[in-house]
Length: 118
Image 1: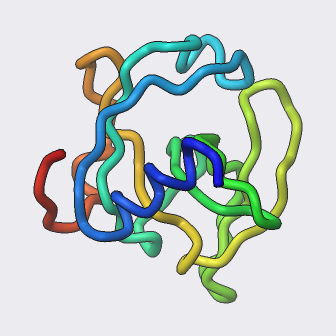
Image 2: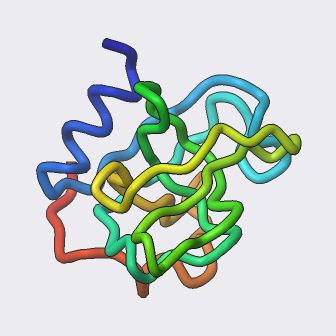
C-alpha cells in the first residue's frame, strides 16, 4: 500500500486531506512536495482539466481528468506530460484537488461533497 492509497482511504471516508505528493508528472500544475488539499468529490460534476485522486488499474494517482464519458460514468486519467493512465469508473474517483500551496483550484469547490478537514 502506497502513500496515495492511505490518502485515498481518508478522502473516501469523507475527509479533506492535505499532503505533499512527490514526482514531476504534474508540473507545472503541481510541483514535487507542494502542499495539495484533496476533498471528496461528486464524480458526475468532473470536467476535463480537473485534478483528481483516482485509482486506475490498481494504482492511485493524483492526475488530470483528460476525458469524460458521462453515459458510462467514467473518466480518463492522464498526467500533465501527455501520458494516459486509463479509464476509471466514478466509484474509483476519491477526491478533487481544491488547492495547491493554498491557492484554490478554479471550479473545484463546486464539485466537492460535504466533508470534514484532516
